[in-house]
Length: 63
Image (cartoon, rainbow, N blue to C red; front, side, top):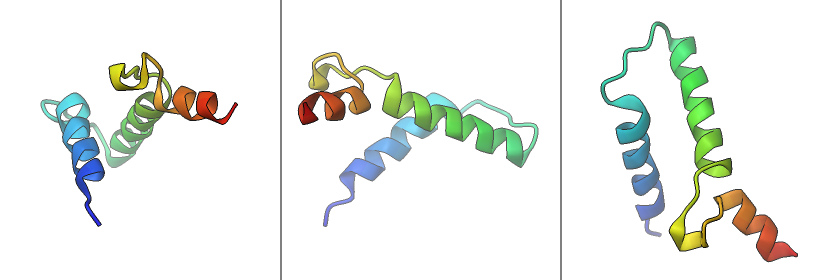
């Protein structure tokens, strides 16, 4: 099985959230990580998904 999707996610995560940031504690990092994952799944629009977020696309396709 190809793990390209996860490699892509972690690459984007590092570029958009991690590089250049300094976290005051592990808890701060975990909070930021949870916020980024929520953004990635619920707020980030994708042209490949016709301007919808991944969650919107899944909900729309189930109707």
